[in-house]
Length: 253
Image 1 (cartoon, rainbow, N blue to C red):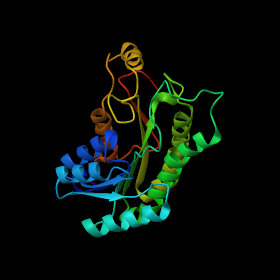
Image 2: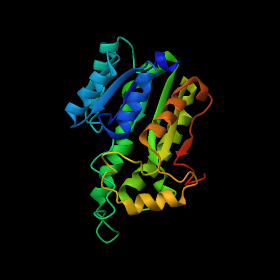
Image 3: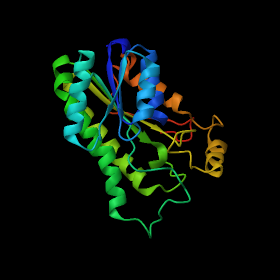
Image 4: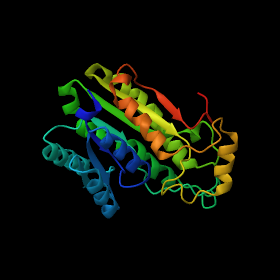
């Protein structure tokens, strides 16, 4: 299915990377569902900027009923089911190397918050759209991961562990859902410059990344968004269960 024919749900799309992904799909002519949790004004402003093919809908990805309601509203608004999901929502985390809890301070709740955001959130969106995707014989699911579980420049324990679990989730879903014409892949960027979550990242950390990356620069949200377009496009129709690292070559997997 061409990108221009797709209806795309992007979770956590009001700002940062999610906003860049929503903008990229809108430029290709896709219908875009901008999911947000708290940032109502930013989400609505983005939808207004992107035009008639975009709608902003509030929902907590951890709440199954809210996601089911979001999917129903989007389907009614565009008069077509959601064909494509980008699981991007980030729950209660910022890339602050100074405030990050160390191994002596971490609590299980810190990990559980990230598991619920990464795994439970992705499970809810997939299950809400799976019936329609199966009926269509087509679906594209893109999960946003991180290269930090391969190269922990900073030990962001709970975030990195949640994203590592998301890779296992991605590959299991790819195995089961392929029979319905649904692909499931993951994109792993590094610390992006710049999003709301990375606005507290110190220049020292960004300089370490820049100096050790073959392209000698820090990856941008727009560059990661391009990879989401690829996985959703006809060019990636035979690609599933993959983790594409988009970080300028810092991690060579």
